[in-house]
Amino acid sequence: MARTRLLQNVLSIIAVGFLIFTQPVLADLPPGNAVTDATAILRNALPIKQEEIQNLQHKLESTRELIRGNRWPSLAKIVSSSKFLITSKNQKIIAAIPKDKSTEAETLFNLINKNLDQLELATEAQNKDAFIEKRDQTLKLIGEVETLLVGDFPFQIPEEYNALPRLLGRASVDIRTTQGTIKAVIDGYNAPITSGAFIDLAIKGFYDGLPFTRAEDFYILQTGDPEGPEVGYIDPSTNKLREIPLEIRSPDKVLPFYGQSFEELGLYKTTPVLPFSASGTLGWAHSNASLNDGSSQFFMFLYEAELTPAGRNLIDGRNAAFGYVVDGNEILEKLGVNDEIISVKVTDGKDRLAPHG
Image 1 (cartoon, helix red, strand yellow):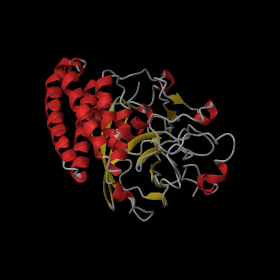
Image 2 (cartoon, helix red, strand yellow):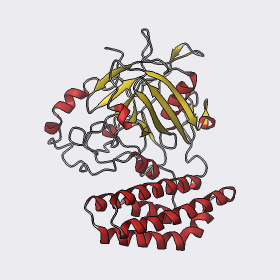
Image 3 (cartoon, helix red, strand yellow):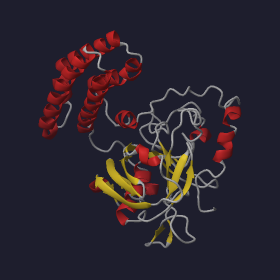
Image 4 (cartoon, one colour):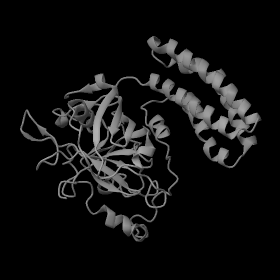
């Protein structure tokens, strides 16, 4: 239907995707070895620079392949070096955290230390399940420490978008559907205008009761198309469609690019800070006619390694990702066009929404 606005021809592109990948312009795209874990992407996307805590994070994240291969001697070295790092560098890390959060940081470090002790025991016992459980718990704690390191919002949004809402930080939402509840983190640090539009509409109850208008196996679930002839949100102050510009940030830039795809910018091999490489990536829909006419419709990307390989999925750099499902991915597999959103509730971060610039 005309009102379903995400890349209307993209399925035909996917169908011939392997032929497209052989063309010179895309032949040397990065291989599909990108990070596919949503929580890891969110940790890496935080606007912080603290080498020690990030080194610890990356050490533990690097164990994912090792644990699959039962490489216990290598795992033991990583756990040992992680324990040394956290013991020798925790005060330096705490010193970088605002003083009013230092007590919370010390509590987190105590928990991290205990978890690393248990991780060492799991390694010695070669207990894979226990290792994975404690590693993931430890990474969650590290992510909480890294969040404490975030200072002021990292950049000034261009004045031309002052009339649009923006999310100055992160928010958490519960997306309640007819198949169950999905929990997602919305990332305003890297897509503040897109995230702001979504959270603004969630608070207004705009999405409540809306159906899924598109459900493509191994590809996307799309919703956000209101009843009636309109294709998005009509701003009552202007009686016009509120349009959100394409907003994608490159890792080497402080400010996102607005209104230009990576292809138009010549960034063929650049992976966005928020990539479509995890199942449940939230993306903002726009029409084929314009990159900047997205208004309310969004989709949840159904990552499938063979059909949409990370780094080569034809969506990175063409659509704005603005968040990730962190719990309830199994619900995504059940949803179809006969389902609907019951409600979207902002559970954290509502205070980070600014109505305009």
